[in-house]
Length: 249
Ligand SMILES: Nc1ncnc2c1ncn2[C@@H]1O[C@H](COP(=O)(O)OP(=O)(O)OP(=O)(O)O)[C@@H](O)[C@H]1O
Image (cartoon, rainbow, N blue to C red; front, top):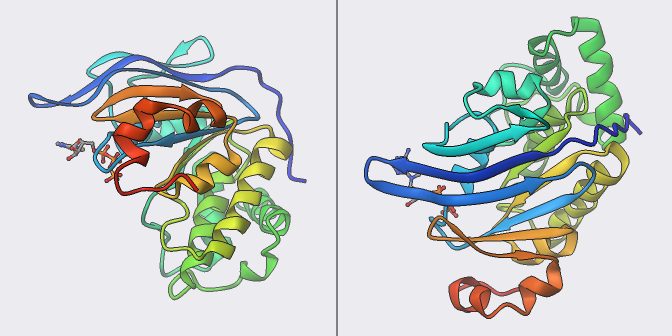
């Protein structure tokens, strides 16, 4: 195990609206990510899921509403300060440094967080070991198989055990078996590290299999939230999403 934290504070959006010119990508969204639990965020294409992740990680300032971390208002912090405050994310594209090996890709993040190079390398090795992929350490980032690239992206986000981890479509392009491995990793992150996870996925079955609480966005608004049973029995969800081109499982 890497480390478990019990910080108790939450990452929350309250009444968040994000407007791009006259278009509202999010309207009055309220959402809470609690430590040690997995939260799902689903919704049709263009619903505002990535905009929500951007807003919770400092990549997008809310037009109105607040983002709080514990008691602190963090809505205007830039991404690197959000990361230092304990809020990490992955991206749909890997965004690794192709000229570095995996160990160095992770160590760079540690150094960016203010740790020494040797402490960062030790953390990277411990983390890769905890994830069951120690053999990746010396692999060049360029040319990594797709699934390993995804794993390294998650490992990088997990350097020095952030309090919150936001995953933007981590299973895209994965086989069923690979998505199942990812599901078990996501559960371990919440259970063993105490991290609060927000999972955005088009793979609704994956989201429902790991999430304690699910939010459903449609056209920038939360149309439903609750546990898996609540989502599966929601007519609003069926109408807006599950009944369109996606299946629940
Ligand atoms: N920087 C921007 N400027 C203008 N419009 C934007 C911007 N970013 C996102 N949008 C619009 O906001 C809406 C929500 O986009 P967003 O990417 O958050 O949705 P999504 O639910 O993540 O979609 P997908 O499932 O297709 O990834 C879309 O209509 C998108 O075109």
